[in-house]
Image (cartoon, rainbow, N blue to C red; front, side, top):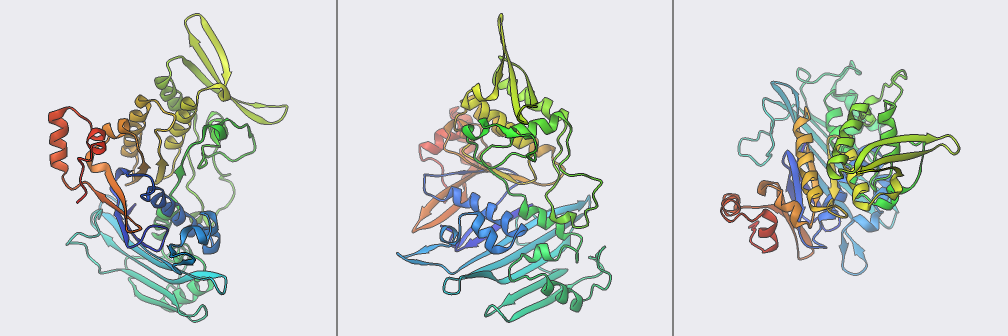
Length: 445
């Protein structure tokens, strides 16, 4: 799990840092403060872990969109970031890691590349959720550095490699020279060394999973209503499309990949989701809890055009009818999509303004469902969420809140400092957290 990020030069994130806690991390603040920029950065992390750096930048809007604007016509020429994280191996063994990179852009040469990458990890006896702790150790068992000066001269240094703690199932002669040669051939000027080095160290796939785990959901009901082809791979997309194919995969117990196909580079691929009828049953129960008139849900493949049709049976009094999903309200469609996304998501995901189109009761239930789902996960994980909803904040915990502000063109995010006072006020007054936020009673100073 990623426990902290440090970012400089990405949109409004200048000298920005943010600690992440297990569970919900709710971003609140005025429009334009930079909440969405934080979400986009995690989406950017996912892209650079998977793809060539130029492609990753293009996928999140292009260089003109993410490099920080300076003055009227100029941009910052680099993005610098440091990612802290930790994960559990077994009951008594944990891994702590730091991944730092600098992405340089040359507008004159039309080239973008990594000018620096540094990956460090070590074993630990507990999960380190705060890298700023006074007891946080920096005696690394693996430390690999890559840097280039003028887009041609490359330096690769293996500062530390403890063979007793780390071994490779794929590479036998895992000495420093071999690692340097292997990394150089993976083209680290344009690809993340985390992905490049997975065969060198068996624990690196967990770091890779942390980086690629970011999924952003901003559901648009009109996109969900569009008919989907039955051959489309299942999975909820950023705008909510893919709902019908995902529900159909659960009905048919489909898997994401054919397990009979050999997959040597399986570390590089996305985690398989579990598409099972039991998950579909849970989704229907949540759907009925939000709308008591809904009796059942089914998905069929229309043989005429191979389009999937989601059918919802409505029953109230003596009236019963089967309606297509397209005829349901925006709130019902968004609720169904969010629930499906939550129950089929990867380790890390984020949801932007889930309150849009949703009844206040549904807003509170979304937060509750996410907490319960995270508590059931075997590994440490978190959810990022942005909101302007007083109803949702009233059902949030003070320690989950991150107040985001924009000062001098810089986004700043901090947790509430006076937690005990806020808890006492909520208990004594009967008012919710949302009331105190919108009355400017919360402080991050």
